[in-house]
Image 1 (cartoon, one colour):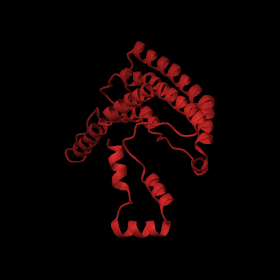
Image 2: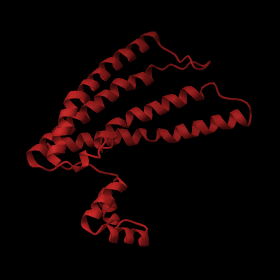
Image 3: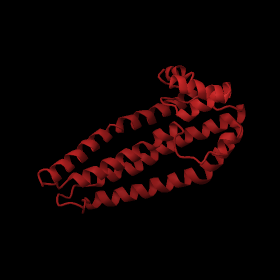
Length: 215
């Protein structure tokens, strides 16, 4: 089971990290557009369409990746003080009541949205070139499937945590600085920790965390 869960994590990671490169393309296009617009007074007729499609692609295709890393925004000023089992119950209820209904609605409406666009060979109305936009809209149901898979993984993790009282292992490639500080503060006096951070410019144990996440 754990191998299957981590396999879906790896799929979400591959998709998210692959499409993360679109930010470089997006940056290059925006820089080029600004340069030709203000230096040569010759704005492109395609820059706006390409930029919003690339940004939308980046935003959508990173969704499952962020979920696999537990990286979506959460009002956790109370959540962080719960026991792992309470956190798991809390997450499980929210997944069932809100996440899955929203994802199914997203997938169904997204498919109809794409199908209508494909049938009409829809083109953008924001520029003279009018590029076709149905390939961009195809990403909506695709993203829904990826989020559904990752959501099922998270539900299984919630059930495992409820049974064992501890969160199961998940893939990790980055770690929030806040988490490192909280972990270090739990091991030693906060005043001593603050003094060590001020003197060294880094969190004690940070190298170990880097080694772990890079493994």
